[in-house]
Image (cartoon, rainbow, N blue to C red; front, side, top):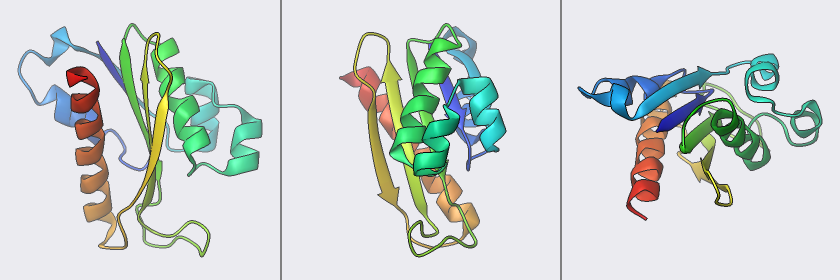
Amino acid sequence: MLATAESCTGGMVAAALTDIPGSSDVFDRGFVTYSNAAKTEMLGVLPATLAAHGAVSEEVAKEMAEGALARSTATLAVSITGIAGPGGSEHKPEGRVCFGIAARGQPTRTETVEFGAPGRAAVRAASRDHALMLLADALNA
């Protein structure tokens, strides 16, 4: 069973998964947690983690993925938090996206991908595709 915890993609990974006929056999639920309050309330991301690292961080991606796993019947969860643009800052540029992948009984993995600034739609689509690849890799491991 799969679960998603999405911020900058706004549910695009869940939508891609549920576009597949029969996905109800393997997809439990998706959390769209765009605001920090939603990340805290729905996924249990600690306010201290948000304060220390910001929403766009591997630390928050880890807590998002683990929260989705804990709050679902899934055995595998992916999370995404990033800056799709426009905008960003010197320290957190547009196109920086952090991912988490959590599986029951295994350590949670995180990674950051710098997609650059190809535009909001392109960053979101690339983030969706990367998350789907992380899920596929985890299922094939």
